[in-house]
Image 1 (tube, rainbow, N blue to C red):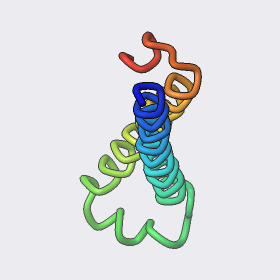
Image 2: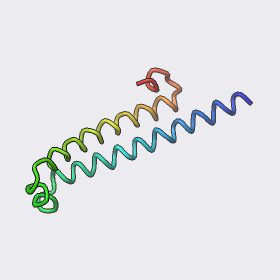
Image 3: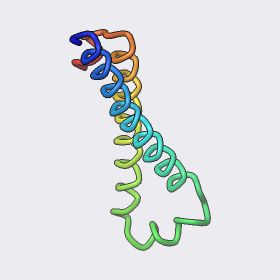
Length: 86
């Protein structure tokens, strides 16, 4: 019974970290799109320079969540305490 509970927790932890990984990937992709796309967002961003700073903040947060989710997934599958604590 105890082994089943630990196995369930392992896969639930992997699942939650995978959702964080996907969210970080979406934020990273959206941030890259806003910064790189020359026609889509330039007129909106040019009206308010604070929005351009927000695009870089979104890019940084996406990269951080992407890395955090990836390391969490690896730590959950390998049952590595160091990666999970990071």
